[in-house]
Image (cartoon, one colour):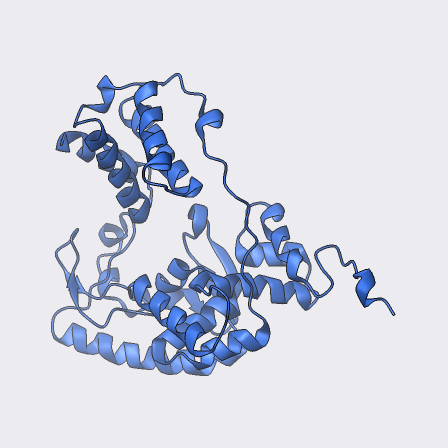
Length: 319
């Protein structure tokens, strides 16, 4: 395995400020590509080799179109930005066609039934997903300073596409969220007394603000129950909770509530958007709250409005 090449890929990703999740994913696909071709260096491979790898993913591994396109994006990054090789590749023709699926949306009663089956921080996080339209990782990465109780708003930092946005903080979440933060602050004070309490910060902030890693306002709203060592700094502190914990809890809560739909954390975001449109809010407002780049993405939620996406009433229901 050409570890030097992987180090180059990692360095290029970090220089371009790609997220850690993207870095992990891209490195995974580069490794698989190299292993698939018996550890040959990618510079010695060409278009036909890339196409054979993508074909194997679809035919032998039965991956989804989204996964196949993810692998293609990682390898195009490798060739274009690391190896500086311009492949004679008709990207549009080899990119897999993704199925345009309608989102699963819960009714208001179903949302509250699922929430009632959750407890503790998991319930609070799920209420934020639904009440503020947050993505799962946006919720987990939320820091103390980004919750504005006075203005009743949440500042989402570095959301999808590395964009910041502002969304609402539901009035009903203020008391339980304040109680939760009081508990977290006590925990942070104990950590500081014990000589830990550091938190990871983006980019060069630890250099610019040396006290920030232990500052209360930079801590995560939903920190891990366990202390861990930051691999970059060696400091001991609390990372945010794992996404897997909330994902499992939501799945189990949906089963307990008897919901006959596939319910994930993202289902709350879909339901948030749909219910706002049902309440008469204009689609541009919903687009801003969700952080969609194109209003066409938001338009998909009109399919579940009470009278259909085009406000057409079925002739079967006519008097």
